[in-house]
Amino acid sequence: MRHLLSQLRSLQGFSQRSATIPSETLYKYKHCKHCQLHQPALKTVSHNPYQSLRHCSSNIRESNWSVHSLESRGVVRLKGTDTVPFLQGLVTNDVAVVGDKTPSLYTLMLNVQGRVLYDLLMFHATDVTGKSFLLLECDTNVTEDLLKLIKRYKIRKKVDIADVTDSCKVFAALCKGDDQKISVDKQLPGILSAAPDPRMNSFGLRIIASNSGSVLKGFGVKEETPEEDYHRERYQIGIGEGVVDLPPGNCFPLESNAVYLNGVCFHKGCYVGQELTARTFHTGVTRKRLMPLLFDDEPQNIIAGSNIVTETGKSVGKMRGHIGKYGLGLLRIAEASKNLSVKTETEENLGVKATTPDWWPKES
Image (cartoon, rainbow, N blue to C red; front, side, top):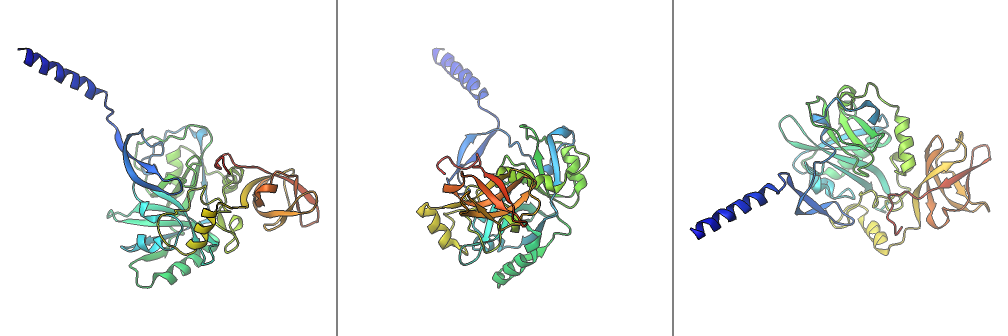
């Protein structure tokens, strides 16, 4: 009898303990300091606040989100059995991690000297048969050049490469408040991919869709916000994008903050331009970086490439792009805190202040 009572107490205690175990126990990946996701570790996690927009609710508060159609961005599709190993040798990040758990990736294509050719956002998607393929988002000014370069490396690889810019539009959704959650409610047609911006999760979502109607409906907004507002927000944060901010063949990935933006993997093996990138990173010396700029007055006639100088006239960097009073400049870090100015086309000196983004590591 005592033995039976002991067993009953044990079973009751086990039942009570079981009730405290969360029902939502998922695999969360450990992060390598400078790489994408690697070995899994069992850990209790909450729901991903960024649910796929293909199942997004249409009752989201309109004031929370703005949707921007990015006409300046094109899309290239790659599909086939050799797609992942083919891209693995061409780009700076680990393509092997892209899938259902990691639907988006930031990466760069370099030339043999280790200079940036194209900045890319990579997205995982599936067709109607369930087969996976990858979408590469790039600046529309270099879409044709990107296609030519990729096809040059293709040789006999089983990869189908196509420019799908006409049928696949790029959208950015930015949250105006702190709450960036979207709820799962209904199917939305035409959405190929919807994922957090891989450069910085707090910088909203990136969507590739065949039309804007489903995207607007998903976020509960009535009309698109001008693309210019997206770029202004991006400049305020300090994220470079496109051929103006990252001129092809004229900048390096570390100077462009690619490591800080999760765009380089140092453990995946060789790729074009890998040697110089790895050597520069491991020496720990990066004297210049792309930094946010705030002008004293809205510039009217400043072009990308203009010199940024100190009060004594010493050049400390180059202008990149700008929208309104916000822009980006490639500056010497040691002198970025000085009183700076940019010479306009009319030979006037316009004051400008460089700032250090709060998402940079503290040691930088």
